[in-house]
Length: 280
Ligand SMILES: O=P(O)(O)OC(CO)CO
Ligand SMILES: [Mg+2]
Ligand SMILES: [Mg+2]
Image 1: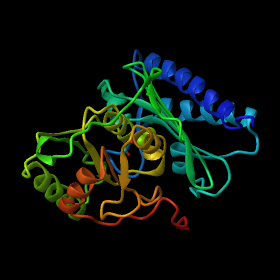
Image 2: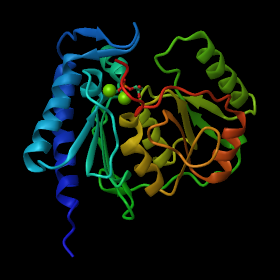
Image 3: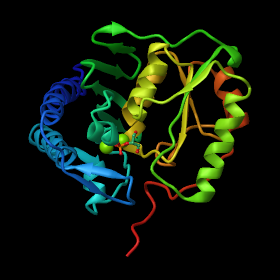
């Protein structure tokens, strides 16, 4: 039977590479920085330009598909994950890194059918690493198969996380309590690349055992979630149980033992879901 989604995946890889060229080029120029939800939630014209490039080019080839894009949602479009084929796009994951030329910046494109991610593409633009995964067909970096770490002892683990862009004191308190709990297990270390997508690719590559965060959005993790699971890893909610792509919370780990151990230490909280009705 013809592989109907392969041409969409091939297009995602090609357009992610093109987007990466634009990002690298933009780093040579002055970057005009704007803010969204708060003073540290940054966006640039390059985020918007890259998102338009991805959406327009995909729409031309696949006119019936749906799109969820970070900057389109910021501009007021809805963020509903239906059963239809849907491109889930973060044009620049790591905008703060991009603004500061901190060298971890990714283009992230997930593609879902029946609310399940079918393929994921994360292009780490400055490292020139193309991470890809197709459901049931494995995860790869520049064509080489990825495999998560075999470590099952949390005390021998590196855990990735981020502080996010909210500075809400109650949320900060939860975030720091979780961080303290995990650091003091102790683990070997805590790291953060500044991008959810690359943190998840680090899990898939076996460089870190786990990544967790509360505050991410579906476009940050759609592609990365499949890359982790196809590399042999597991996904969980921060309270255990199944990960929900729209819930803004995630634990991605090399195995269930590590994931469940981290879940025990996370002081969880709830944020407005990505698919919550728009406030009028
Ligand atoms: O840079 P972005 O796309 O805002 O994403 C952040 C998290 O929201 C880093 O993953
Ligand atoms: Mg992002
Ligand atoms: Mg982004």
